[in-house]
Image (cartoon, rainbow, N blue to C red; front, side):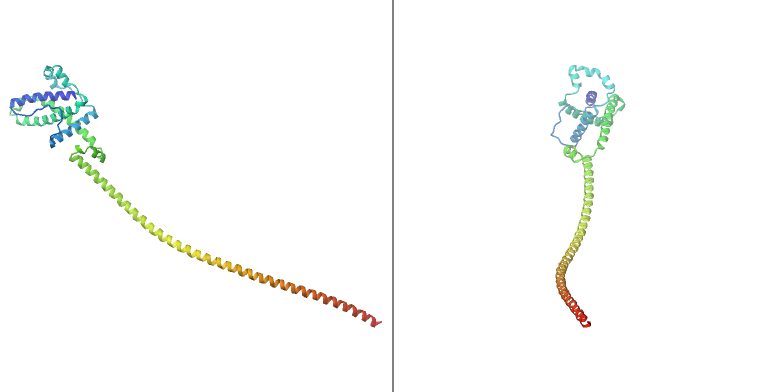
Amino acid sequence: MDVLIGNLQIHETNKNQEIGKKEIKRDKSLALIVTSGDTSEDDEDTSYLTRRFQKLVRKNGGFRKTVNSNRTANANYVKIGGEKDKRSDLVPEKSGRKPVAYYVVKKALEVWGDTSSDLEESEHPEDASMLPVKDDDVIFDEIFAFMEKFDDEEAEKEVTLSDFKKNLHVYFVKRLRNLAVVLINSITELTTEMDVMNNSLDMFHDEKVALVSQICVVEERMMVMESENLELREKLSDNCARGKSEASSLQLKLETSLNTSEIKLAMALEINDQLERDLVSLKDELKKSLK
């Protein structure tokens, strides 16, 4: 981070000298605080790139420190200011990192655009110093290659509703399109699930109707069986009553017949006794007559 800031400061100085020679008036403000007055598309892009730059630096621990020939060639210029320049070259405190990152990205965008325009406007491109341009190319290639890699990693992540709510103020058309795709897919999935649920509900409703009809048939059969059972009970009770009455009458008849038979038997015994007595008397008379 400190190497990048130093390179950008050196490039700023060289660019100011070239602009002074060409008498082109440009605004090279070194303000480190982001103002909230202008909300144009360029400022939004710069703010978005600043946040992305801070995020990827925090995630990956900064850029790879390489040997910078431009910094070596301009070492005397860096050392002129003494302690003040050394302090400006240090890593800023936590509270000042966001403005510095904003400044770095903003100046990177400005220099990136100014470099191409200056090369087109220059009448003698062979006289221009190629060292700062080469150094800038290396720096910006590293910046945008790093950010492109980070974008690829971020593109693999799905955009969710919570991410949308959290980062609504920084989303652009690309993010909103990704969110729209996610929402459309979610709506499609929900619609499919709803159709499946509706079909299931229809099937359950048909099964319910069939079960209700079967229950009605079973209830009718139960009512018929209950009526038949009641009739059988009535018949059984009638048969029991009738059997009891018939048994009683039969028993009465049997008892009457038995009594009659006993009486007849007693009378027959008496007659037999009488006949025996008569027979004895006849024998006696017969014996008397034979004498």
